[in-house]
Length: 96
Image (tube, rainbow, N blue to C red):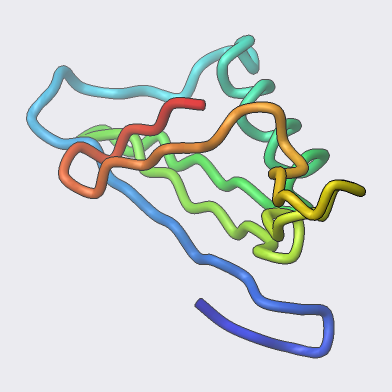
C-alpha cells in the first residue's frame, strides 16, 4: 500500500506458474478488456499484464478511496459497489 496526496492505493500483483507456455495474444480479449477497463473505471486504478512465457503476470494499482463505505440515510453502511471483491492470497484469483 502507498499513500500520496490523492489518497491510499493498494498494489496487487500475481504470477501464474506451472501451467502451459504463455504467449502474447494477437488481440486484446474480453477478459483482458474487462479487467483493465473495470479496474480503471470502477476503482480508479491501473492494470498491467505481462505475458511471459513461464506464466501470466498481473500488476494492479487500486484506489482504496473508491472502496470506502458510503452512508445511507438510515445510518447503515453500504458499499458503493454492488458486489464485494474477494481476493485469495493463496491462489491469486479473485471473484466479485
